[in-house]
Image (cartoon, rainbow, N blue to C red):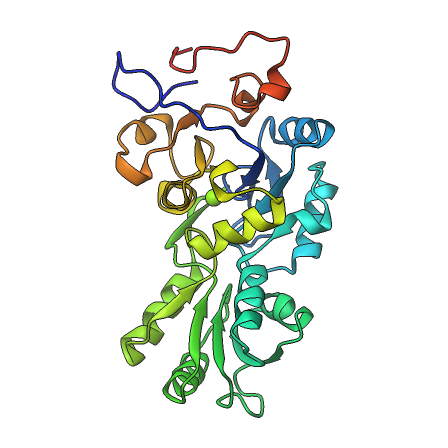
Length: 301
Ligand SMILES: [Mg+2]
């Protein structure tokens, strides 16, 4: 375990933690670029199992919107990760809640079929580009869309020019896979739409505070009592810092240990975990470390 602090400085104190939010890609597992095959990262099953056994609430919030949450949760359970259907969320889960609250009844979806699932489940009418009424919507929702073409971009622009509000699942250019950093399609798609429309958008995935507040409500704890575990300073760490939550950076995704040491300000996690398993022994969760002396978080191993 290393701390993110200059040598000789004490590690930043950790506030009491009442629930956990885990990132998926680069934190609990690595997928193929095609999102087909998965490799669970060492210690991930142990950590989630220990939290479950200790009845400490946790959720997984991925910025990946390719699959409906229950389908993605089932994939994780098949890999041995104890994630219940109601503990896995995507930006589409957050979008569905925000749109419902804003009275949106019909949305144009730019994404694979799974992207619109949470909206449909929330009672929002969804329509895809090329379908009748694609311009007659109150919202445009952009998610995982590897097959996006210019007609899709055009449909989104027409809807926005007609008054629709744009919601975006992920505004992150890259995420971690087994093959290394991989392009986030919605980032590029939104770039094209905004070049045409200059439209602002509502981000529903990480690092938006909408996402953190959603997670805190699901955990049933205040946002400042949430611990956010993730591999990306611009995604999980900034979100946690903005919302007053505790942040843990892992070295199994887009950042190596040395990369974390260079981060400052809101990109700087409270702690860096060389292995996610370190959560079980580093004193961050007193219930789990009862009987074990709390380790000096600043000590290099
Ligand atoms: Mg990640």
